[in-house]
Length: 118
Image (cartoon, rainbow, N blue to C red; front, side, top):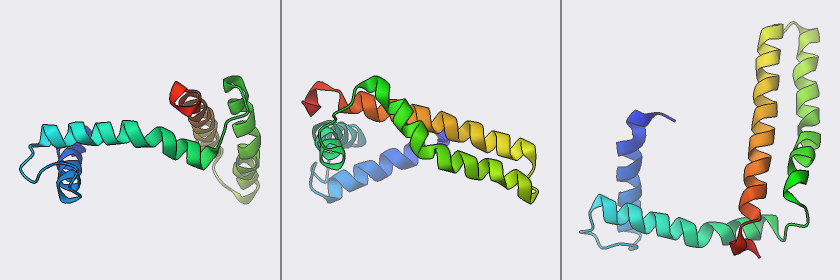
């Protein structure tokens, strides 16, 4: 994320909302962004429900599942040591993978336990 990209992203979102007819062609950027936010709030929960289905697990189970799934990726990172990869790079990749695994797992779990999913 780069803060200097924000105006470009906002402008593109506004252009998208105008061109798809979600707001009038004369709507200002703020109106278009508000409409986009409303659209995301209305459609995102259903999109997650469609992709993930009913969630049979509790929130606390997701990090364990995600860790198990990504264990093979982690072992692949460690195996790179035998092929001459720098230990520092392997460690950095491993930490990044573990962080990503846990944060994404908790985020998905948190979103899917919102009242809109039930």
